[in-house]
Image 1 (spheres, each protein chain N blue to C red):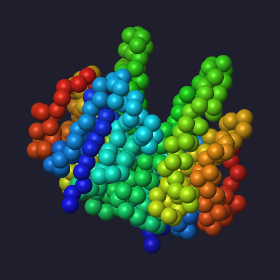
Image 2: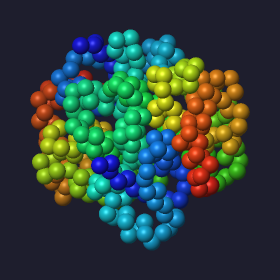
Image 3: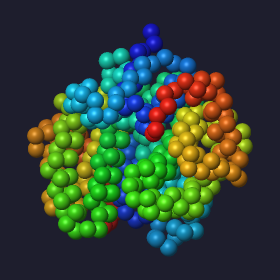
Image 4: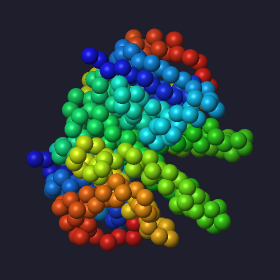
Length: 204
Length: 204
């Protein structure tokens, strides 16, 4: 088996989806966390001047979702048929949209009044509508593809918990019973449960 | 029997064009359904779609959304995704990275203030693009492929995204010989060449 080395900053950020997949897959990897002053030296040696990167067998991958999909694929967590794989991708892309919307419309908004307004809209209109769509896509058993845990379920959990700390209260799954099941399936996965207990506590 | 594909989007290139190019390159038939902006048809269809967005790909009776998910699905189905999990990950990475450039292009396109627009264009041409294309030049081979020694959806995606830059800066690939070869390979591929001649001319 190749040796995997994941490099990112000391935070969850865009690397956490990869760490969660490694955990669910039970695949060992080196979880390298750089200090900010170590980054400038490494940056020009990365494919796109960004983190996270995954190194294995002398090759380097970047782009967090590509890395996550790759590790998930090798562990059978990316969907069992081409259509299931597309379902997994579709949900993951949707979660990225949800995260990006928060980042660009709210997190980076400098005007405090605008920020508050956008946050209200996000929590009261956008997310409930999006969760309603997602709830329809999930199975009764709480899976977005097939009847087992996939990267899609992990992506749902990861993005919602990523956004929650920046809100007045965590996003509600009331009225979305299947999404609650998805979250339960993710957090009760043995590898993930262990990681959630053991992972470093970081500000982001 | 081969599945029936129906691609649904607005009557623009936009987020559906990559998939149209892939179908063209692979010589695979599909229904290229286009709505005008503000159409009643889209208003009616929207609540029945997975995430209330287009493009959509109907594969027999399954509905997929999310433009890159759709493109990746078609790439896989037509043998354009890469020949191994690692090659698929490399292709994914190349395509994901293009989103950074597309975000800048969208910001320019959406900017109504002419002075601000000019500033954004200057930043793109003077600062972002040289860095971005420099990274991508290293990822492409001298033969003009991002992955291995044959065309994948990564090459076609690069060609497609660059198509939004060249109107602003026709000489943008000067000095980037590998990337110029990628573009050359894609536009001279018979299926693509035919589509480029035949496709509807739209502003975006």
